[in-house]
Image (cartoon, one colour):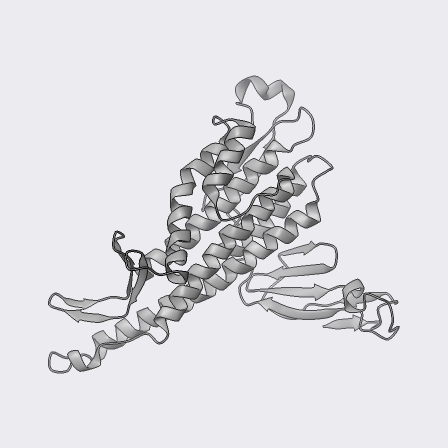
Length: 330
């Protein structure tokens, strides 16, 4: 809600009524202000974008909308854009890094992850409720007739993996902004080789890319097998089935060589893995761009120490020169 004066050329005061509890965090870039509460994100479009050519003096001062129904309390929000901004603020970075462009690139990744998170949440809930209903209502006489089914399971699975692939593909723009490169995602074997050649295979960034590249390749290949299926490379989505040993839960199978995977156990693991990859890769990349001889190291925040309203996982700590002999370099 906008209170006070209402037009773009006058002073304004913006009041955020949406969501629960206090404002947790605010991030502003060139023409967007995002306000984070624990259960939503409110996007406020600033005057320069409401009426960019300054034609209408009566144009609204801002446009305000809830752009996500998950907020800072969820890890896909806290550990992507919010954490990245906190890392930027905590480091003395080289001036040539465009911080607004970097945050915009990370915002794109976060939005893909929010889409994947919402699909995963509702899909898991549907499977849970269908299972409970089957257990409560099924009987030995009518089990075969009442096997539960999840509506649009194949479409939802495909959309989840599409959002994951888009996240990995667009995350390359975060690296491009930090390193002034023009790499293309999601071919991480090429990206890994680039940084191995530029920074050396002993560098932490190369090691992280090398460690995660097989998992990224697997996820991208899953999605590619949906987009371009072949007889020897296709992605099969199966709903509930009744077999001799009982009810089989919805699963994925990357045919013919992949394992059969339980959807409800796999999708949270995929989200965790992708967020972990993004946050670690971003943090290490930013450390590489610290100005001058200053040295920082990364600290991982345990679950017990995390703020439940905004559970960030990584922070930086400056190492004064007098303590350098006790610490390894960045």
